[in-house]
Length: 100
Image (cartoon, rainbow, N blue to C red; front, side, top):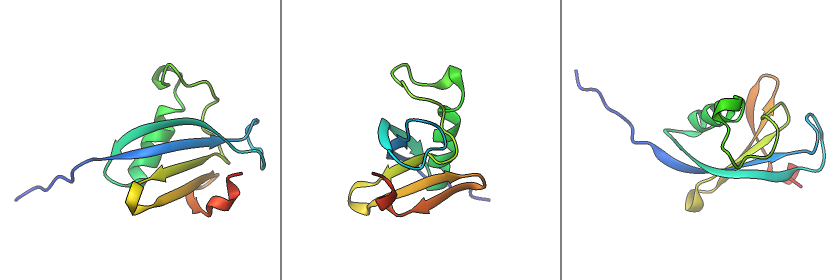
């Protein structure tokens, strides 16, 4: 049996948060990084895990843990941009108009 491994892609990820957790207005960019993953689902899972454990947070990250209501932008250059918002039942794609 031949196993196929999908090559990891480097995704450009930007985290947007409101000043207080659960806020509905005032989103601002709080961090930008690159995540190696196979697809958007894996990017979302890896980013959530990385930014929700104190020991794994990047040294230059100065914001709170990712929580419900936060938004991630996955920018793939020519392939386009996709925004995801964290709801109580998981990540869902949203229209970028919510990021203001």
